[in-house]
Length: 545
View 1 (cartoon, helix red, strand yellow):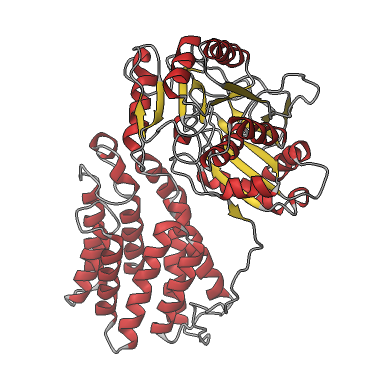
View 2 (view 1 turned 135 degrees about the vertical axis):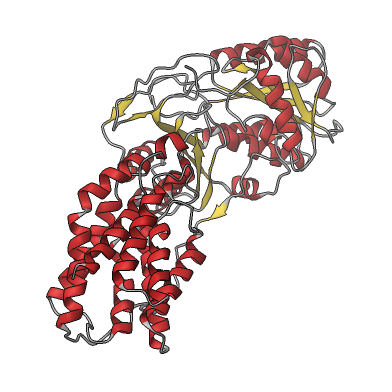
């Protein structure tokens, strides 16, 4: 089964180009209607007064190349099929329709199809009387001995420099010289954890689990080496060793998401890049962002550009394109010092054998029920309800045994219980129980009776947790038990009410809160809610004391 959303494969690129035009915030893109098989996107505001900049290549690298069309960068992009160079006719038609007297510069990545097709188109255009130059970018340093290094994400910095010089009105020779100098100043290397998935094709996984492939191409080509690690610092170290120049000149780092990396991972990579001793002294950061992708490849590339005053001015100049991200001046982090305010209020331990016995009975009941509650939860949730409640119970039991609890002051005992459960239980269950005990403690401290205090805790739990009776949660057992106590009924009646509420959850066809809410009725039928079961068991244990 393929992993690609599309309608018709033949319409994929055309439809995607139209989508990018729709989404352009500058509203400055337009398709050049020449032939159904020719895809040219250009600046809508283009008047042919300046040197035209045309780039392009295979699709699948979005936002490149259409995302970099606009004032200050490209004039037009010629788009081929996914990972396939556009035809000679397509490039030629872009040149003759877009180029004015100032001439045209083609910026081409160093792949055979692009070199040949753009090159032949340039020759034909020159024969037709157009002034056309071409710069071939080969910034990939994965194979330093290769006489034909590939053009990868560093090409975008060449677009930026050439676009800056062309926008200020310089002639074709000057624009070409600036682009060539920028091309010599960039070095890029990529890394991936998995290759990309092509439209309507099966793609195998050649990269072993726990490893990364270094120096791969932007069309899914295999890399030059495999590192048996996924440690960000180690990967970054290897990349920087390859791309950083051996001097102290000013430089910029471009961090490019190849398509499948999460924002969290890219932020980690960025931190490791900037804080590495190898990159110390870098002046600007561009990214992290998907700039020149390889469909959904899970990987990233790092480009280093050695800066001249002109390059620095160029990369910082504003543009009207959707794909570029502004260069950021790298400065040291300056966290603001603050005093941590403790949420816990220290309480004086005190002794009360009767209360200690009740606390231990509750804890022992939850600990003994751990395995059974986990089994129940495995059928309707993530299988950890028993362990979660048992973790809280063990902590409270330990503190009781160590005589650290304020057993003789009930409001303080409930408050401390809430604080401990929030810390050790984890997840939403711990917070909900902490809310319950904290609110109950507050009510008790204001002079309320215990049943009313428990009812206040229940109301706060419902308010913040969002669950109500009938939603198939522990509230279905807890609420009827507390209502019985508030009505003045004995503990035995409260325990019976809790058991009835727990039993009723087994026939509730739909959960409306918690993880069970993501399951259908067939998965829930006949299985009681494990939280409700835990509550019922606690009340049953208290009834027997």
